[in-house]
Length: 321
Image (cartoon, rainbow, N blue to C red):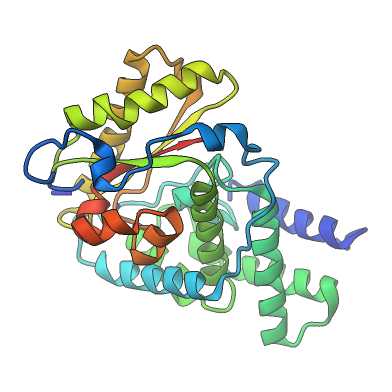
Protein backbone atom coordinates (compact mmCIF):
# COMPACT_ATOMS: atom_id res chain seq x y z
CA UNK A 1 0.00 0.00 0.00
CA UNK A 2 1.14 3.21 -0.62
CA UNK A 3 -0.68 10.79 4.62
CA UNK A 4 0.28 46.54 16.10
CA UNK A 5 0.35 48.97 13.52
CA UNK A 6 3.25 48.65 11.13
CA UNK A 7 5.76 51.26 10.09
CA UNK A 8 5.54 50.17 6.45
CA UNK A 9 3.41 47.86 4.29
CA UNK A 10 6.08 45.16 4.17
CA UNK A 11 6.65 45.35 7.92
CA UNK A 12 2.92 44.88 8.28
CA UNK A 13 3.04 41.66 6.32
CA UNK A 14 6.13 40.46 8.14
CA UNK A 15 4.57 41.31 11.52
CA UNK A 16 1.53 39.21 10.75
CA UNK A 17 3.71 36.42 9.45
CA UNK A 18 5.60 36.52 12.75
CA UNK A 19 2.27 36.35 14.58
CA UNK A 20 1.26 33.34 12.57
CA UNK A 21 4.65 31.69 12.95
CA UNK A 22 5.42 32.57 16.56
CA UNK A 23 3.76 29.51 18.00
CA UNK A 24 5.17 27.30 15.31
CA UNK A 25 3.02 28.08 12.52
CA UNK A 26 6.90 5.10 -8.48
CA UNK A 27 5.41 3.88 -10.06
CA UNK A 28 4.78 0.15 -10.12
CA UNK A 29 7.89 0.26 -12.20
CA UNK A 30 7.42 -0.24 -15.91
CA UNK A 31 8.21 -3.79 -16.85
CA UNK A 32 11.86 -3.99 -15.76
CA UNK A 33 14.44 -1.33 -15.09
CA UNK A 34 15.00 1.04 -17.98
CA UNK A 35 18.59 1.44 -19.07
CA UNK A 36 18.31 5.22 -19.02
CA UNK A 37 16.09 7.10 -16.53
CA UNK A 38 15.74 9.82 -19.17
CA UNK A 39 13.59 7.35 -21.10
CA UNK A 40 10.94 8.05 -18.50
CA UNK A 41 11.10 11.79 -19.19
CA UNK A 42 13.26 12.67 -16.18
CA UNK A 43 15.62 15.65 -16.18
CA UNK A 44 19.21 14.49 -16.60
CA UNK A 45 21.43 17.59 -16.71
CA UNK A 46 21.53 19.37 -13.35
CA UNK A 47 24.13 21.99 -14.42
CA UNK A 48 21.80 24.90 -15.39
CA UNK A 49 20.28 25.18 -11.92
CA UNK A 50 23.66 25.02 -10.26
CA UNK A 51 24.73 28.11 -12.22
CA UNK A 52 21.52 29.96 -11.29
CA UNK A 53 20.73 31.97 -8.18
CA UNK A 54 19.70 30.10 -5.06
CA UNK A 55 16.09 29.83 -3.97
CA UNK A 56 16.74 32.56 -1.38
CA UNK A 57 17.83 35.15 -3.96
CA UNK A 58 15.83 34.16 -7.02
CA UNK A 59 12.90 36.40 -7.99
CA UNK A 60 9.76 35.59 -6.04
CA UNK A 61 7.32 33.50 -8.06
CA UNK A 62 3.73 34.63 -8.39
CA UNK A 63 1.78 32.94 -5.62
CA UNK A 64 -1.69 33.74 -6.89
CA UNK A 65 -1.90 31.84 -10.18
CA UNK A 66 -5.70 31.38 -10.22
CA UNK A 67 -5.75 28.04 -12.05
CA UNK A 68 -3.05 26.52 -9.86
CA UNK A 69 -4.57 27.88 -6.65
CA UNK A 70 -8.02 26.61 -7.61
CA UNK A 71 -6.54 23.19 -8.32
CA UNK A 72 -4.81 23.08 -4.93
CA UNK A 73 -7.97 24.25 -3.15
CA UNK A 74 -9.91 21.47 -4.85
CA UNK A 75 -7.25 18.94 -3.83
CA UNK A 76 -7.30 20.16 -0.23
CA UNK A 77 -11.08 19.74 -0.09
CA UNK A 78 -11.03 16.34 -1.76
CA UNK A 79 -8.26 15.07 0.52
CA UNK A 80 -10.06 16.26 3.64
CA UNK A 81 -13.08 14.23 2.56
CA UNK A 82 -11.09 11.18 1.47
CA UNK A 83 -9.30 10.60 4.78
CA UNK A 84 -12.32 10.70 7.07
CA UNK A 85 -12.60 6.92 7.20
CA UNK A 86 -8.91 6.19 6.75
CA UNK A 87 -6.97 4.26 9.39
CA UNK A 88 -4.70 6.83 10.98
CA UNK A 89 -7.02 9.75 10.26
CA UNK A 90 -7.98 10.02 13.93
CA UNK A 91 -4.36 10.39 15.03
CA UNK A 92 -3.47 13.71 16.64
CA UNK A 93 -2.11 16.28 14.23
CA UNK A 94 1.60 16.71 14.81
CA UNK A 95 2.39 20.41 15.32
CA UNK A 96 5.97 21.68 14.95
CA UNK A 97 5.95 23.23 18.45
CA UNK A 98 3.67 23.80 21.41
CA UNK A 99 0.18 24.01 20.00
CA UNK A 100 -0.97 27.63 19.72
CA UNK A 101 -3.34 29.89 17.81
CA UNK A 102 -1.62 29.63 14.44
CA UNK A 103 -0.35 26.07 14.36
CA UNK A 104 -3.26 25.12 12.13
CA UNK A 105 -1.36 26.81 9.30
CA UNK A 106 1.91 24.98 9.88
CA UNK A 107 0.75 21.50 10.72
CA UNK A 108 1.08 20.58 7.05
CA UNK A 109 4.73 19.87 6.35
CA UNK A 110 4.77 21.80 3.09
CA UNK A 111 3.67 25.07 4.76
CA UNK A 112 6.06 24.98 7.70
CA UNK A 113 8.87 27.49 8.13
CA UNK A 114 11.46 24.70 8.09
CA UNK A 115 10.57 23.81 4.51
CA UNK A 116 13.71 25.03 2.68
CA UNK A 117 11.73 25.46 -0.53
CA UNK A 118 9.14 27.83 0.95
CA UNK A 119 10.54 31.10 -0.42
CA UNK A 120 10.15 34.00 2.03
CA UNK A 121 9.24 36.59 -0.62
CA UNK A 122 6.59 34.30 -2.07
CA UNK A 123 5.30 33.59 1.43
CA UNK A 124 4.99 37.35 2.09
CA UNK A 125 3.06 37.71 -1.15
CA UNK A 126 0.77 34.83 -0.30
CA UNK A 127 0.02 36.40 3.07
CA UNK A 128 -0.69 39.79 1.50
CA UNK A 129 -3.05 38.32 -1.08
CA UNK A 130 -4.89 36.33 1.59
CA UNK A 131 -5.20 39.32 3.94
CA UNK A 132 -6.50 41.58 1.17
CA UNK A 133 -9.06 38.99 0.13
CA UNK A 134 -10.31 38.54 3.70
CA UNK A 135 -10.42 42.33 4.20
CA UNK A 136 -12.52 42.74 1.07
CA UNK A 137 -14.97 40.08 2.26
CA UNK A 138 -15.31 41.71 5.69
CA UNK A 139 -15.33 45.33 4.49
CA UNK A 140 -12.09 46.17 6.31
CA UNK A 141 -10.27 49.24 5.01
CA UNK A 142 -6.56 49.76 4.40
CA UNK A 143 -3.56 47.69 5.36
CA UNK A 144 -4.17 48.01 9.09
CA UNK A 145 -7.76 46.86 8.61
CA UNK A 146 -6.58 43.87 6.60
CA UNK A 147 -4.07 42.90 9.28
CA UNK A 148 -6.68 43.27 12.01
CA UNK A 149 -9.13 41.10 10.09
CA UNK A 150 -6.50 38.39 9.67
CA UNK A 151 -5.45 38.56 13.33
CA UNK A 152 -9.09 38.32 14.45
CA UNK A 153 -9.55 35.34 12.16
CA UNK A 154 -6.55 33.60 13.71
CA UNK A 155 -7.96 34.13 17.20
CA UNK A 156 -11.24 32.52 16.14
CA UNK A 157 -9.35 29.30 15.56
CA UNK A 158 -7.67 29.16 18.97
CA UNK A 159 -10.53 27.17 20.46
CA UNK A 160 -10.32 24.64 17.68
CA UNK A 161 -6.63 24.01 18.24
CA UNK A 162 -7.31 23.29 21.93
CA UNK A 163 -4.41 21.30 23.30
CA UNK A 164 -3.03 20.18 19.95
CA UNK A 165 -4.78 16.83 19.97
CA UNK A 166 -7.19 17.42 17.09
CA UNK A 167 -7.32 14.61 14.59
CA UNK A 168 -5.66 14.94 11.23
CA UNK A 169 -9.00 14.50 9.48
CA UNK A 170 -10.55 17.31 11.55
CA UNK A 171 -7.55 19.51 10.88
CA UNK A 172 -7.68 19.11 7.11
CA UNK A 173 -11.45 19.57 7.09
CA UNK A 174 -11.15 22.78 9.14
CA UNK A 175 -8.60 24.16 6.68
CA UNK A 176 -10.62 23.14 3.63
CA UNK A 177 -13.85 24.63 4.95
CA UNK A 178 -12.24 27.96 5.89
CA UNK A 179 -12.56 29.43 2.40
CA UNK A 180 -12.29 33.09 3.49
CA UNK A 181 -8.67 32.89 4.66
CA UNK A 182 -7.15 29.59 5.78
CA UNK A 183 -7.62 27.45 2.70
CA UNK A 184 -6.55 30.13 0.18
CA UNK A 185 -3.46 30.90 2.27
CA UNK A 186 -2.49 27.25 2.59
CA UNK A 187 -3.07 26.68 -1.13
CA UNK A 188 -0.89 29.66 -2.03
CA UNK A 189 1.87 28.48 0.32
CA UNK A 190 1.71 25.10 -1.40
CA UNK A 191 1.99 26.89 -4.74
CA UNK A 192 5.06 28.79 -3.45
CA UNK A 193 6.66 25.43 -2.70
CA UNK A 194 5.70 23.96 -6.07
CA UNK A 195 7.10 26.93 -8.00
CA UNK A 196 10.36 26.76 -6.04
CA UNK A 197 10.74 23.14 -7.08
CA UNK A 198 9.81 24.04 -10.65
CA UNK A 199 12.50 26.72 -11.06
CA UNK A 200 15.27 24.61 -9.55
CA UNK A 201 16.80 21.55 -11.21
CA UNK A 202 14.98 18.45 -10.08
CA UNK A 203 14.18 14.88 -10.92
CA UNK A 204 11.90 12.09 -9.76
CA UNK A 205 12.89 8.71 -8.36
CA UNK A 206 10.05 6.23 -8.84
CA UNK A 207 9.32 3.24 -6.63
CA UNK A 208 7.44 -0.01 -7.00
CA UNK A 209 4.05 -0.14 -5.31
CA UNK A 210 4.50 -0.40 -1.55
CA UNK A 211 8.30 -0.43 -1.86
CA UNK A 212 11.03 1.81 -0.47
CA UNK A 213 13.82 0.15 -2.48
CA UNK A 214 15.72 2.37 -4.93
CA UNK A 215 15.91 0.41 -8.17
CA UNK A 216 19.22 0.05 -10.06
CA UNK A 217 18.22 2.31 -12.95
CA UNK A 218 17.58 5.27 -10.69
CA UNK A 219 20.60 4.55 -8.49
CA UNK A 220 22.96 4.46 -11.46
CA UNK A 221 21.24 7.18 -13.47
CA UNK A 222 19.58 10.17 -11.86
CA UNK A 223 21.10 9.76 -8.40
CA UNK A 224 24.61 9.32 -9.77
CA UNK A 225 24.12 12.61 -11.59
CA UNK A 226 22.90 14.30 -8.40
CA UNK A 227 25.85 12.94 -6.41
CA UNK A 228 28.33 14.16 -9.01
CA UNK A 229 26.84 17.65 -9.12
CA UNK A 230 26.80 17.95 -5.32
CA UNK A 231 30.42 16.78 -5.14
CA UNK A 232 31.43 19.40 -7.71
CA UNK A 233 29.41 22.25 -6.16
CA UNK A 234 30.12 22.43 -2.45
CA UNK A 235 27.65 25.26 -1.81
CA UNK A 236 24.60 23.32 -2.96
CA UNK A 237 22.27 20.96 -1.13
CA UNK A 238 19.59 18.48 -2.05
CA UNK A 239 16.03 18.28 -0.80
CA UNK A 240 14.37 14.89 -0.98
CA UNK A 241 10.56 15.01 -0.95
CA UNK A 242 8.95 11.66 -0.24
CA UNK A 243 5.44 10.88 -1.43
CA UNK A 244 3.07 7.95 -1.62
CA UNK A 245 -0.02 7.42 -3.72
CA UNK A 246 -3.53 7.52 -2.28
CA UNK A 247 -3.82 3.74 -2.54
CA UNK A 248 -4.28 2.24 0.89
CA UNK A 249 -3.79 3.19 4.52
CA UNK A 250 -3.00 6.84 5.31
CA UNK A 251 -0.74 6.01 8.25
CA UNK A 252 1.12 3.31 6.36
CA UNK A 253 1.68 5.61 3.39
CA UNK A 254 2.92 8.47 5.56
CA UNK A 255 5.59 6.16 6.93
CA UNK A 256 6.28 4.71 3.50
CA UNK A 257 6.93 8.15 2.00
CA UNK A 258 9.40 8.80 4.83
CA UNK A 259 11.22 5.53 4.18
CA UNK A 260 11.46 6.36 0.48
CA UNK A 261 13.05 9.75 1.19
CA UNK A 262 15.48 8.15 3.63
CA UNK A 263 16.32 5.41 1.12
CA UNK A 264 17.33 8.03 -1.46
CA UNK A 265 19.31 9.82 1.26
CA UNK A 266 21.17 6.59 1.97
CA UNK A 267 22.20 6.36 -1.69
CA UNK A 268 23.60 9.90 -1.61
CA UNK A 269 25.36 9.25 1.71
CA UNK A 270 26.89 6.14 0.17
CA UNK A 271 28.24 8.32 -2.64
CA UNK A 272 30.07 10.48 -0.12
CA UNK A 273 27.63 13.37 0.23
CA UNK A 274 27.66 14.80 3.77
CA UNK A 275 24.45 14.36 5.74
CA UNK A 276 24.17 18.09 6.45
CA UNK A 277 23.80 18.72 2.73
CA UNK A 278 20.71 16.52 2.43
CA UNK A 279 17.28 17.71 3.58
CA UNK A 280 14.36 15.29 3.76
CA UNK A 281 10.63 15.80 4.03
CA UNK A 282 7.62 13.65 3.32
CA UNK A 283 3.98 14.31 2.56
CA UNK A 284 2.48 10.83 2.57
CA UNK A 285 -0.44 11.14 0.21
CA UNK A 286 -1.51 14.52 1.55
CA UNK A 287 -1.44 17.74 -0.52
CA UNK A 288 0.25 18.64 -2.67
CA UNK A 289 0.23 15.43 -4.65
CA UNK A 290 1.69 15.49 -8.15
CA UNK A 291 -1.39 16.16 -10.26
CA UNK A 292 -1.53 16.99 -13.94
CA UNK A 293 -1.27 20.70 -12.99
CA UNK A 294 1.76 20.12 -10.74
CA UNK A 295 3.36 17.82 -13.31
CA UNK A 296 3.08 20.64 -15.84
CA UNK A 297 4.72 23.06 -13.37
CA UNK A 298 7.50 20.52 -12.76
CA UNK A 299 8.02 19.87 -16.47
CA UNK A 300 7.26 16.16 -16.15
CA UNK A 301 3.96 15.99 -18.04
CA UNK A 302 5.35 13.24 -20.26
CA UNK A 303 6.08 11.07 -17.26
CA UNK A 304 2.67 11.86 -15.73
CA UNK A 305 0.89 10.94 -18.93
CA UNK A 306 2.83 7.67 -19.10
CA UNK A 307 2.38 6.38 -15.56
CA UNK A 308 -0.62 8.28 -14.14
CA UNK A 309 -1.29 10.09 -10.87
CA UNK A 310 -1.02 7.17 -8.46
CA UNK A 311 2.26 5.88 -9.84
CA UNK A 312 4.01 9.25 -10.17
CA UNK A 313 3.29 9.86 -6.49
CA UNK A 314 5.04 6.62 -5.53
CA UNK A 315 8.20 8.68 -5.60
CA UNK A 316 10.85 10.96 -4.18
CA UNK A 317 11.34 14.33 -5.86
CA UNK A 318 15.04 15.30 -5.73
CA UNK A 319 15.73 19.06 -5.81
CA UNK A 320 19.14 20.79 -5.91
CA UNK A 321 19.24 24.25 -4.36
